Picture (cartoon, rainbow, N blue to C red):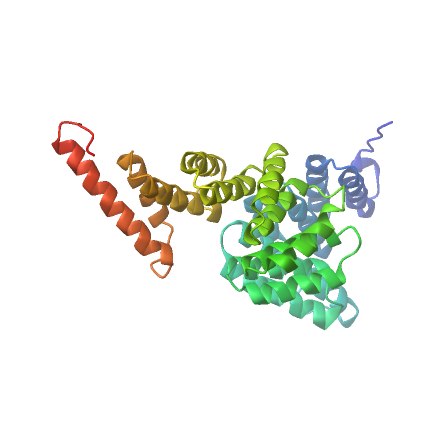
Length: 345
């Protein structure tokens, strides 16, 4: 039976605590939206550091819900509530709460596409933890994620390994998955596969289809094309559309099945977030496949090359290749225009 106690019926110092307990109960039940609202009410009913902590709890759940802007807004309200000079008795607790604030801010900034700012935040979180307590799994994991976005893969692996060493049994699959992907980014598929296989043995891990797609990528890089294709097809059927389709595109290319490869890359372009790494890679590969086909549709090849070039730095090996494809597609489009639309041999 649900029991809702009006906060006005309680002494003032208990009102925010009740809403906090209720929020925690809803959070444990997976009722995140209700918990967010209750933490907001608890924040409204409290003051000072209690209010800051409630706002941070709310921000943590908003991040889980994929709302980094709203989380950032809650964190902006929380920060001024910290005293400039806490008493010696308060210093340790305030330091750890402030470490949590920086940890949450780092996540929000990373999700908002600001990895450099996130890096500053997560370093400060780690410093405060070391000063006032012990290193935590969460800070190490987010530090690894930030470093991955900054392209510092070796340092990311060190951070993810630290997270794995600090992880509880519940957290270990998350750390192993991140570690496996980071090793894959460094083209170390044997080590990556070992970490990813450990995650596949955790039936409750929520991202198993993505892990299976990553295992398929490992097998592809190890030259096990049949295994990679089977695993990627299973991952695709289970909902890991983007990573599985990228592997299937690679396998189709190795078998010189160009039309099939193009279908897989087109699926990635439809499903991936615009301007994401996978989206850019799919435009790059689609352009290259069309070039191998002899530009049967130069306008489509030109469009793919344009999209890819707008997100490919000049230092990338792909940049020159894409420019060459763009020029060839443009020339063919001009020839078609000058021949009354007649297809040329």
